[in-house]
Image (cartoon, rainbow, N blue to C red; front, side):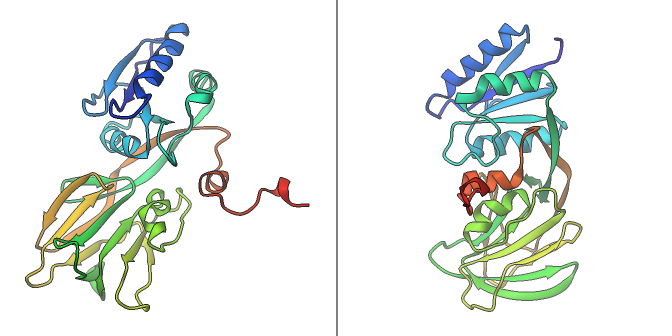
Length: 265
């Protein structure tokens, strides 16, 4: 097999190196050449990348490889593992499915803001974390409202099960082309989350004497004091999913939603 594979791992996570070596061994047994990469030393020019770690590791890899249209496959070592498809326990099965092309590529929408992209969300907060801040919102250059809140979450469908959900936002199917806008701890009960088209241009207007901190996927952090524009990115994250993958079963299993039909008498 001549395809170029890479194994990306997070050396700061427990057992990451051990799982990386196990995965490398499984690929070697199948005659597959693969290169080992640290999450902090990513490189392009691969046809497929295994990513070992938690959701944060997968998010970082997804942002990088979205520029090259490279599929990534998550192996969970974290707590929730919402973006991962396998764990150490079923690694052998997952590798066999990937090598036999029994998987699909799901293109996940991303957002862009200045020179940053995000697969989950952009979170805007005031520069003084202990105080509420004012956020004036425009959509397609039309004024919507002004929030007095701890922050605002601008989320993709993929990110709707992350911080946005914890802040009371809706859960969207990852194939929906939409953006959610969720205020964090707003100072009034009338300030509710809204869902807008993925093609809409979202602008956060700067307020006088107010500085803001923005985080992309909770990782890349930057500041701004002028107006901030957030839009759909031209790039997509290419997540490799096993064919048995089902978004709603993931919700049940990861978030413990509802009751399985098998449990209903």
